Image 1 (cartoon, helix red, strand yellow):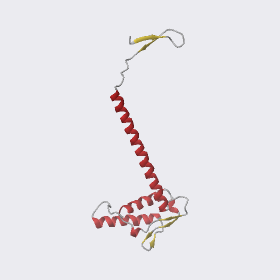
Image 2 (cartoon, rainbow, N blue to C red):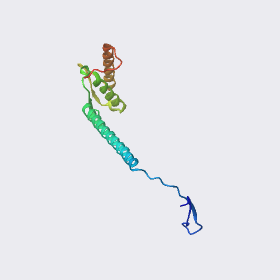
Image 3 (tube, rainbow, N blue to C red):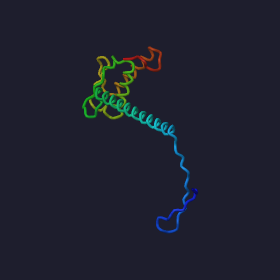
Image 4 (cartoon, one colour):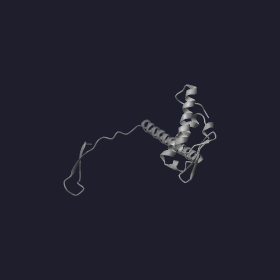
Length: 147
């Protein structure tokens, strides 16, 4: 077989020249290896999608528990005097999101002991002060104390 063949023109004119390149067939081992790679990628994608769904579900549940919904007229936060460690960081993240989304204009209930915060910004300031106090008492730049 020649690498250069002539085939009839699709419109009935002069024949067209084409180049035929030899096709290399893959071995059974190569096909199996490719199938394994594809299956591994599918498993990775499935695991990624499941993790994403779990994290999204947890974030929505946390938002519902914290009162950070746009449908609510009030926002209730935990008494920050009892919050420790990673829970402080979570609360800071939640309040920052609340402020960014503009939900902080609603009636806000956040406490530091018996003292009530007038705004999300004040509550955030209290949380950040609490983090600084914990960091200075543990001589650490991050909070690793579990709540």
